[in-house]
Amino acid sequence: MADWQSGLFALPCGVDFAAALADGLIERMAGTPPEAMARVTVYVNSGRTAIALREALLTRGPRFCRRSSR
Image (cartoon, rainbow, N blue to C red; front, side, top):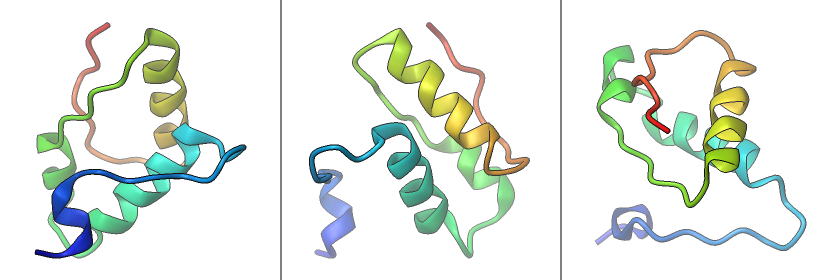
C-alpha cells in the first residue's frame, strides 16, 4: 500500500494547515479529470478550519469543489 492510501498525514508545527492541505490535495489530484475533485470529501474539526480550507482552495485558482456544509 502506498503512503497516501492510508489517509493519515502529518505536518510540522507552525505550518498553515489549510494551505498545506489544499496544496497536497491538488498535488494528489493532478492527472485526474477536473470533476474528480468534486468527489473528494474532507472532514475538518471546526467551521473555522472549513472556511480557511475553502479560502486556500479558492486562492489556488478555479476548481470543481463540493458545496461546503457547515
